[in-house]
Length: 206
Image 1 (cartoon, rainbow, N blue to C red):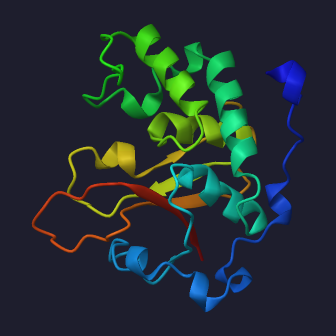
Image 2: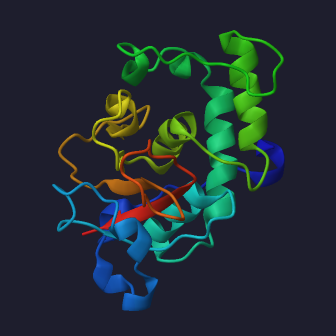
């Protein structure tokens, strides 16, 4: 893959200003806006991303260049990151104090190697849903932290779903640049008495 596609260029997020002024009012995701946690509702505005299974990468592309043209490249780079740094993701710090374990989604059994290889293959498949593992890897590829916001503030796994994921080789703690995304649902969260179910991701802008 590297021989065919080469290495990605260094991204310069410091040159990007993450502001809703870059988007029109019609691009605001009003459904997602209604599920942003109340303590953050006035701070961030969600922008619509295409819900085609590539929503994580679409959102990251919107954050970088205000359109979704880099989504395919971001998915490819995320595959590189996972395949080349398996040991780093064997025990990510965000999962140390939780009950979350890796498991294969194809029914082939349990265990880190099998589950991780399955995740790599799934990440390589276009239009396939991404989760926390892909977010961690994408942060490393972008070279900036990705902050995730989760609507249900009472969820038992909130420390995992709402977190800041730093690049694997993060070396500039003084840089305040961060990409923010919201775990979302294309139907919103109409019944708050029921558990929130994620089926989409959108970018958040100040």
